[in-house]
Image (cartoon, rainbow, N blue to C red):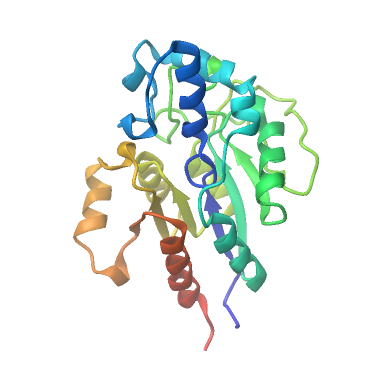
Length: 261
């Protein structure tokens, strides 16, 4: 197969590659004697579901980082590895992890990816959203500050040791900024806000896969809703994929656009 250029695909981590929320809910239920399930989460702003403030929820999550629930109980998403390995083997796509995870858990994040997705990703980019220092921002997009701070963590090659960034750990960058850095052609993410931001602010972006049938991604921004509902399949820039087998089909379509006859 001959292609015009290598494709670049940005892949979110939590709820796309790994079941982060499932492990967090197990921890929260044990600590607080609650009975929440992932299906209860209509929002990924956790305090919207279990109550309290965003800052309090951030403290719960950071406490979770210190436990075996975070270190050992985050399971990979079904079929993700098989699909990614298939396309990695074709040697026409460069895959990057583009995650909103905090820089304080970058080393643990890399170790988890090495355990479950070894050899697949060319690099890891971390946005440092929901950090203690900027919990008030929540999801960082181009509209609320992402991309405005020049002191950002650099891309971490997946084959390199993880080093703690020497710059300001409180700084955050948007998914759009990270996707621009790698000139991503496709983003696979479960968050509608990130889909909108990347389509509007990343010139190389051809399409976004809105991944998973989750409570928090059923309601989408008006601009994304129109892209999902009112465009012919061949022209859609946003597509829903409930699982990785559907993602596989979207990767086939994307590759077909770049094939040289």
